[in-house]
Length: 139
Image (tube, rainbow, N blue to C red; front, top):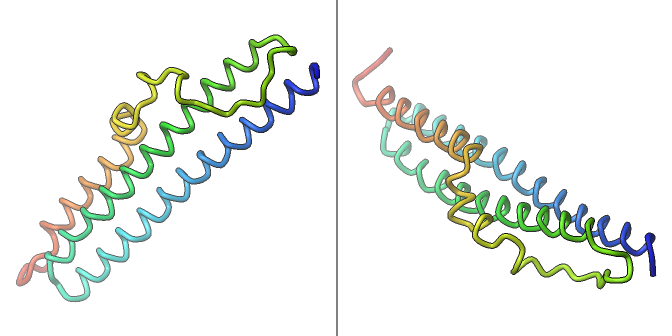
């Protein structure tokens, strides 16, 4: 084992980071799609109650996105640890339970700026739509 083993281990970790990032991206796409579909349903029937249902998928996608972001951050921390290891200490370990656990918790990631901005914007848009789509009120 040597430099090749270290590079291979780093490739494994990078593949996991990429997968977590892709999952996060897909969740955002699905969240926008589902929210838009619920808005269309609410507008069609002119029923603001459908808009209230929109908060459920926003919350679920926000929680899932926070999970994937926390996992991604943990694997980034592992990547940084492995890149500094000497080649003979490489064990191909993918355990992230001890890498910066306090900084990369699920709660910390849910309240990260990127997720707060994205899902906060969905909540604000949902509030606006909820007040715009009311029976008897036409723009």
